[in-house]
Amino acid sequence: MANYNQEREELHKTIWSIADDLRGAIGGWEFKAYVLGAIFYRYISENMTKYINALQGEDDFDYAQMTDADAEEAREQMVEEKGYFILPSQLFCNVTQNADNDENLNETLSKTFRAIEASAVGTPSEEKLKGLFSDFSVDNSQLGNSVNMRNKLLAKVLHKIADMDLGHKYQDNQIDTFGDAYEFLMQMYASQAGKSGGEFFTPQEVSELLARIASHENENIRKVYDPACGSGSLLMKFAKTAGKQNDQLKYYGQEINPTTYNLCRINMFLHNIEPDKFDIQLGDTLHEPLHIDDAPFDAIVSNPPYSTKWDGKDNPILINDERYAPAGVLAPKSAADLAFTMHMLYHLAESGTAAIVEFPGVLYRGGDEQKIRQYLVKNNYVDTIIQLPANLFFGVSIATCIIVLKKSKKADNKILFIDASNEYEHRGNKNYLSIENRNRIFDTFCNRKEIEYFSKLLANDFILDNDCNLSVSSYIEKEDTREIVNIDLLNQQVKQTHQKVIEKCEELDMLIKTL
Image (tube, rainbow, N blue to C red; front, side, top):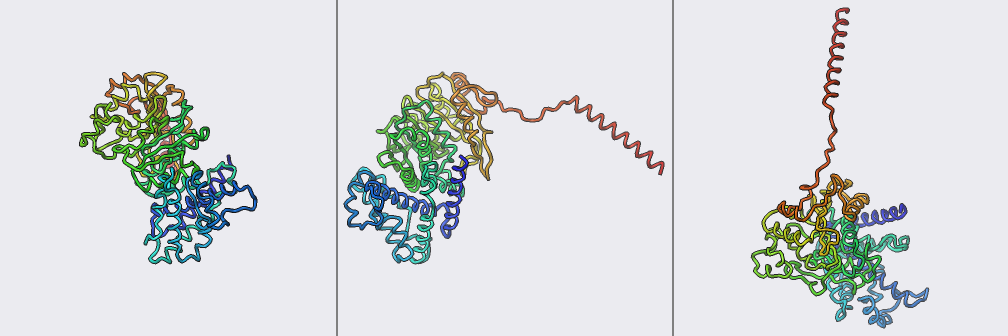
C-alpha cells in the first residue's frame, strides 16, 4: 500500500507540473480541455495500438509503423470491436513525433479528430464519439496571436502528455493510469475553478461513500444511473467498486452542460469502459428525461445541482408527469432539488438503492417541499439521512447531506439519521472524508443501530407528526465537549490563591520596613 501511494503521488506531482507549466493566456479551467483532450487522444491511440498488436501475436509487430493503406484492412473489425478506428499516421505518437516540424499542426489535429469521430458514423458507437474533441479548439486565439504561436503551444501540450509515465511501473493495475490522471486533473482544476468547479466534479471520497451505500446488499446490480452526471466521477467510482465484480455492469447518465457531457464520455473511455457498456445523453433531465426506456435502475448515485430554478407550477404539463404526479405537488420554481429526487425515485428498481447528495434546506423547508417529503415518508421510501461535514465540495462551503431512498425497505418503517458533521480531516482549505470517517458512516448505515450523539432510528409516524422534518440536527443531540467545571473545587482554589496573595503582601511589607 505504501508503494502504491508513493507511485500515485509521483504521478499526481507530474500531472500538476505539466498542467502548471502549460497554463498561459487561457485560464486553468478553460485550458483543462487541452490537457484532458490530449490525454484522451493518447489513450485511445495506445489502446487501439495495443489491441491490434496483441491480435497479431508477433513480438516485432507494431501497428504504429504500418502504412495507412495496409492498416485500412483492419478498419471494419476495429470499429466493430473497439467502436472507433485510427490510422497509423493519425496516432498520438506519430502526430507528436512530427509536431515540432508540422507547420500545419492545427489542421493535422483537426483532421485527425474529425476522422476518429467519422470512423464511428453509422455504427452503434457513433453517438458515443460524436463531438468528443469539440472543446479542443486548435484555432483558439487565446492560444496565441498567430498560427505559428498556437501550433507551438499545441506541440508543447502533446510533448508534455507524451512524457507522462502512464504505462510502465503502473502495469500491475494498482493505479488506474489514464483514468486516475484524468480524475486528478479534474479535481485539481475544480479546486481552482471557484464556484463552477462543483458542477463538474464530486470529490472522490464522497463518490466512494455513495457507491458503497448504493451497492450495499444489492448484489445483482446490472445498471447504475446518474441523471446529473457531470464529468462522470460518481459513475466512475461505482465502476471501481461494484464494477470490479461485474464486467456486465452498464452505466447510464444525463448531463445538461455540453462541455461536461463531453468530459463524462471521455471519462468512460479513459476508464476502459467499452462503448456498448455506457449510455451518456445530453439534455435537460427534468424536462426531457432520456432514459425512461432503460429504467428501472438497480443503483442510482447523484449529486444534482443545488437550488436550481425550473418551470415548476408555470408548466401545466409537469404536474401530470408520471415522475412528479404521485406526490401531488411540484418542487418550487426556485429550488428543483426534490424534482430530481422524485425523478430518481421513479427510475429506481424495486430492489434498488439511490444515494443522493442534497442541499440541506430540502430536509426542513415548508410548503410544497414539505408535502413531497410527506409523500416519501408515508410510502416508506426514505431509508437514511446522513448529515455531511461542511466545506467538502468545490465552491460549496455549506454542509450538505445524503438522502438514501429504497422502494422495498426490508428492515422497518423507520428512518436512520446519522450526524457525520464532525467526521472529517482538514486538508489545505477543504475538509476531507478519511477512510476512517467513511467507514464509520458506512458501518453505521449498514448496522442500522443507534449510537449516542451519532445516529438515531425513528419511526415514520414520529417524523410525520413533526412536520415531516428530516433535518438530522432536530433529532440527534450534539455532544457537549466543553470541559466540566467543579464550582466547589474552583471556589476553594480561589480562596487558597487569595490567602497566598495576602501572605505574600504581608511578607513584602515586612521586607520594606526592614530596609
